[in-house]
Length: 308
Image 1 (cartoon, rainbow, N blue to C red):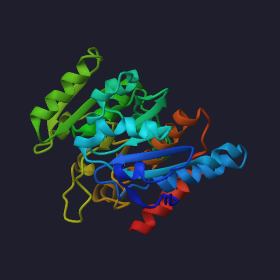
Image 2 (image 1 turned 135 degrees about the vertical axis):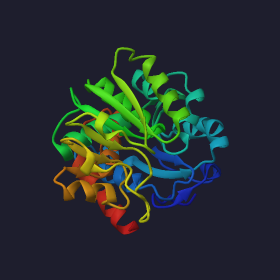
Image 3 (image 1 turned 30 degrees about the horizontal axis):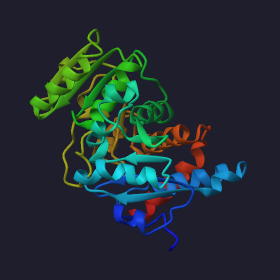
């Protein structure tokens, strides 16, 4: 059997043709070519193997799996001994019905991005919220505790962010979205387990700046800002004493939202740190070890630079 290449995109059919080693890991997505998870995780595993040689047998790959094939593919990955899997777009919600065991945090976030092999089945977790929490602390210098949060978007990334903010004790949550039906569905799901939380909604088409809290963290979970012609999703100049802006977008590395914030002295950061920290937590779940963030960050930044 040929040796697999972590830089290559594989299909489920390749599981029967190739030997991925005694301790493989993988990210599943559709598409998945853009993922920088393999170099990020393999750099961390290489560092871990310096002290514990058993991690030399661990390798991380990427598989392109159509959504309609995801659930039926999981037993195939389990049979080949894949110790852990990451699920990226659009699989984070698709995978839920296939899992008999899901962490409370993942249930609150309504999505799973990390699967760990337990016996012959996978159990689910979510590390995206943890990634946001650590990224805000590292890049902006404050915690979510007792901090008002203005969240832009109501999709899967927004739900994970909203749940993490409420779990960490944010003093209030203001969620803006264009699609009001999706927005109300998000608020209803959050209210099921956090009925006492202060949650407000607004339309991104007509932002009520005067009603938004002062000293807030702004989190952009929308895709607005990925294209050069995109408008500002929110105007930092109209926010009262904004504490910081975290844009989940990491390509381009400095969005119009970030540039506008920095021009008026508001701290701003892109999504790289969140991407790295969610990966750190996933690898800790799979290995049971503490994982150094440095090697993962360096590999992530290098891979993103090469793609640019």
